[in-house]
Length: 321
Image (cartoon, rainbow, N blue to C red; front, side):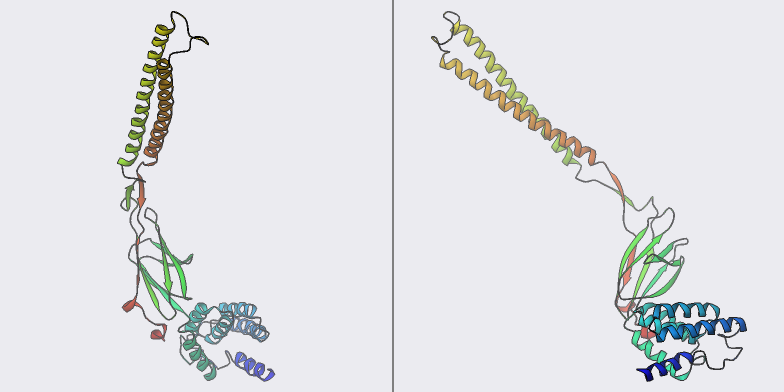
């Protein structure tokens, strides 16, 4: 383990150890002060890396890159990102580290970088977003990715990702994109104006609430008819009592005639049935009225067209390497 640490420390310290041409693009315009500061941060990062403090080492490397964006320092950041299981960021930084080929890197470091490129090929996918509408802002997983018109490609970890496109006065789109390792998903965004993308929808067909409301009124009307029959039967009962009980009265010794009692019972039955039917009809009519209110037309906008491309549109990361 100690020998491994010595070898790794040597590999880390070697970056950037090669004598760089002052005219090289990764050196041009960088002051000696910036180089000194970057190398000091690089040394701190290397020590932290050997202590397996990868997040802290990555912080030092990024601060060093801010002073001097040397490919060798970038590659040390790649090493940290791989250890931190952040393959998409590692792939992005690896491409920056290999931007100028082998020239700025030691031979062993360049060979290691090429090996990492092959390793990451199937661990990272791509989302390509393109749109033609001016002023549309597109984000990927809540991070801005492109201002339209234009297109861009972003390396991401395999799995589900969310593309959102917005513009004032247009319908916001939201699309789920499932990315497979080593593949690219194309998302073409086209937003609809607020005034054109909507349709009026209802909860139920237009006739349904009216049918319920009208049915409730009809049921309540039937109950009213039953109440009318009950009232008529009760009037017949009253007249029968006057006729049959006027002479001797009706009481314990002279019971109400059976025919008269039957009229009273029939009137009570019709009255009870009428009350139940009227109550049911009223409840149904109220439900219909509520349905009429809830069935008011609402303007609903369709989702924007977002088309993920598969098959021929998909490419592997290795096609770019």
